[in-house]
Image (cartoon, rainbow over all chains, first blue to last red; front, side, top):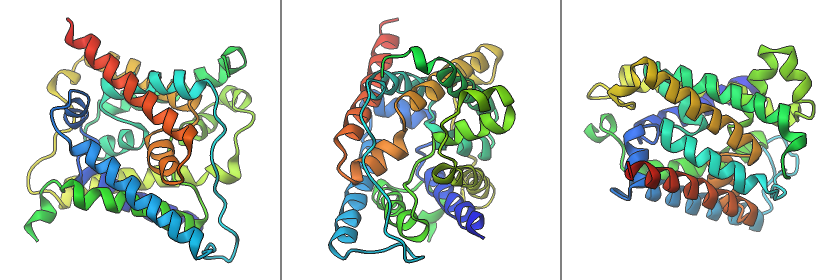
Length: 136
Length: 157
């Protein structure tokens, strides 16, 4: 039952990402070339709405639907946030896809994105195989 | 309702994306994020990967597998039923062997980079910034620094 909830969340998220064209290589190019504000405005307005929601949740001490305390917190900073983050930025500009949009591109029929996905899985495996040698 | 079948404006899509932060948190008590789904798929695909990814937080992260299946279905629904014109998200030159190689190489950077940075656009730039995390701000600035640097380098040639 829980898994169905996650799939429904995914379907709705996939619809919004695709309708907003944030899964488009062209939109990503336009963002990094400062040709249009579309992506910046989407991310910016999403963060504003998300941040206001979190403040309301805190102020009203909202609990999860099942009565548990909400579990969220800041991730611990490592050097990987900078080095890995920049690597991801390169990959984002090349492929026109961050992780969610890879799946959305495939769903939208852009089948070369299967190569992006294969690369991403390989990259994840490479990271975990080498992480003990990387600066943290 | 014609706008619905056209590409959505930022002021419609952005706030809806932002609402996923409280929705997923309150309904499922999960932090929005996607990139650790790569780890999970790797673990399913290969016993070697399972050994390498020894500290995977299954309880916290396994929902993302269903989330990305949903994202794929959502995109199918949009392309089949909710668009007034055929959708094109990748340029023509990616439909070739060199194009596939470029996407694969870029994909490696996306996979390696997001795992090393412990998050991607959804986990750091949307969720992380929404909880005012300074670590996620540094990650987000690095994403953009990388993308802008790559775009600048390409523009030189």
